[in-house]
Length: 331
Image: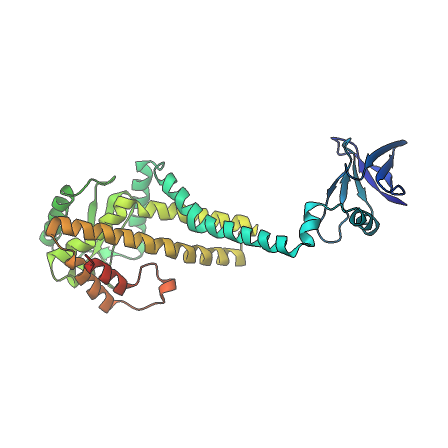
């Protein structure tokens, strides 16, 4: 039995018409360009192709044969127990399932552990100037599009700053010296940290607090974000997640952009909740050091909980507030 196809010489992309002689039981004979290349069936290397594409047969001498039709060759190879890895996988359900589980596991591990670990390593390589430039840019943007100038009296702002900066001196140093800014949103109480040590305290949050210690609790929570460099870590992590998802999908437009955005949000929500827990722990430890109690943190959380809109936990970037209140009061 002879099978027609194309043959490629060793280490060459050139190709020639050829015939593969399968008339002998344990030997193959390749007829190409007036010469005969022979090999034992046990010495050839078979590279399977997906679906119905013909396999590729490589001889020990380096010659490669690709048949025009796959059926006769596959029947011969199957009869002699020769299959490539892909062919074996296609007929081995267990191997397929194991391979699929490995791929899924590696993908999940990349997002849940690999990217966070890599972000942690990369954040130390980011120059201080980049943190400060990013903070300036973000603050300028939110001032233009969202925030309003603070309406707190100047002496009240100065008093809170002086108290906060004095407390910072009693705590372990952070990479960036905190810079407290006041703004008004006209909406809901909030405070947040930017990269480079900038903390934004909204008037609404100051008004919500019923004591200086509760203001301290919020500021120390934001200082925890600065201490752990959460903002830059999340920026790096988000970029890595977006790039990885786009790489896996093979494109970055239209529907894929939407899916990538949703995927980044859901994956990062878990990381954000962990960051909030770390900031809570930092604030709790700092309050105990400064005031001997973390009760102010629990109190301000209770007030925030009463004023906040409930959303599903899996969509929230913050841990459950009742859980945070309980942790703040835990010994």
